[in-house]
Structures are given as structure tokens and as C-alpha cells.
Amino acid sequence: MNETELHRIDRTVKQWLRTSREFILSKMQQNLSVSEKSSRKDLVTNVDKENEKLIINKIRTFSPDSQILGEEGFGDQIRQTKGWVWVVDPIDGTMNFVKQRDHFAIMIALYIDGQGVLGYIYDVIGNQLFSGGPDIGVFQNDEPLAAPENVSLRDGLVCLSGPMVMHNYRNFQKVAEASSGLRIYGSAGIEMIHLLKGETVAYVSYLKPWDFGAGKILTETLGLAVTTVDGKPLDMLSSDFVMVATVKAQQDILPIIGSNV
Ligand code: IPD
Ligand code: CA
Ligand code: CA
Ligand code: CA
Image (tube, rainbow, N blue to C red; front, side, top):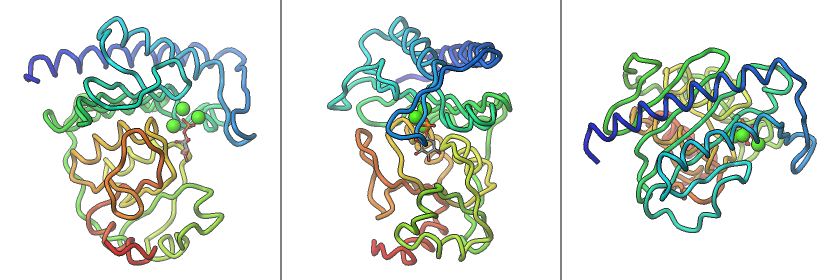
């Protein structure tokens, strides 16, 4: 794709995101309708659903031949990644949205023939938009972001998901112990933002495609390693234990959790 076309898409997606943010902010003033999905720890609200519909309508008008993978089910049933595939997480960090009205993000990604082209993570309350891709670099609002330093696990903070720590999945408590400290933010998007800014050196969580679609593009563009916890490439259509880390931290973590890559 030529640069003019890429920038045209980029400008368009940013407009959708601004509209979507305004929509969420207006809805936050009203009572939320909250329901449980798989458990009391897995919530969805009317705003998640309405915002997904809003974004998907924009995508369908802009690019009717694309496939859309959306968390709340208003997109398509996708079996293969040929052509344009948009990945939408209308509110990442729904629990934070419900309990804190803060620390959540809107995430959109565009893949073409399985390759990440553009990724967007929008911290709604902080009004910070992280955007870009391999051909244009990564931006925080309008400022280009430099690649984070290649810091080791020992010298950096690590983010893990709550359940992984509570159940000591694959000995990840040892990983936390070997780091400078553990952080748990409860939104994959917000945790990816900390990596992009060089504030943490690793993030590991069981994630679905809409949780990692945008973050994978942005973090890889800035030189971070994005794999499964076994050091294998991610499958865009499957959920897995995902590890995003500096190259040094990744090499430090793999032996602790018994992955021999
Ligand atoms: C969740 C958040 C959370 C992660 C979960 C995700 P959602 O996304 O990103 O941090 O640990 O696995 O499902 O459901 O709030 O969009
Ligand atoms: Ca969810
Ligand atoms: Ca999510
Ligand atoms: Ca979500």
C-alpha cells in the first residue's frame, strides 16, 4: 500500500476513535447496564456493545469488503485472514470501566493478508492515542515515539495478569520476583502502552485476538518481542498466553518458566 493511502486510512481511523471516545464519555454520565458474560469477573456493558456497533458501522461504510473481528460479536465469523481484517475491542478493561470509570482503552487494528498494518490504542480518560505501524512508526498523539531501551528483567517492571499470579501459572511468581517489581493494570491496552513508553519491560497474559491485535503491531514496530509464552509466533485467530517484552527480558523470562526456545 502506498504512503498516501496509508495516511488516508490513518486519518480516518483517528476520526472514528475521537467520535468513539466522545460517545463513551457521554454514556459514562448515565447509568450503565452491566451483565456477566462467562462469570462475575467477566463483564460487558451497554457501552461496550453500542461502541462496537458504532465502530463497525464506520468500518463497513469505509471498507465494505473487509472482514471484522469484534469482541462483542457484531463483526464477522472469521476463519481465515486473507484480505483486510479489522480487529476491534470497543472497551478494553471493562472491569476497570465499570469499577473505576478509568484505566480502559479503545483498540482497533488493521491486518492485511495476516500482516499488521496499523494499530490504535486509545486511553480514553487520559486522552492519549497510541497509533501507527511498521511503515509509519509509532506516535503518542502527534509525537513520534522512540523505541524503548532493551532493558533486562532485573532492571525493569513486569506486568502480569491477576489470575496468572494468583495461580502461579508456569512459575510466573518467580518472574515477578526476578524483576524490579510487579504491576497489574487490568487492561491489555493500558499495559501495552506502558511497554511502548519504556515504563515496563514485559507483559504476560492470556489474551484473545482483540486484546493483542493493536498492541502487537505497535510493540513490534518499536522492536519489542511478541510471542506466546513458549516463544512461538501468535496466531491471529486464536487465544493464547501472550508475552510482549524487550528482547533481553524475553530471554530472561523463558528459562524461568521452563520454555526452551
Ligand atoms: C480484558 C483485559 C484484561 C485481560 C483480560 C481481557 P476486556 O479485556 O484486557 O486486562 O487480563 O484477559 O479479557 O474483556 O476488558 O476487553
Ligand atoms: Ca470482555
Ligand atoms: Ca480486551
Ligand atoms: Ca473489551
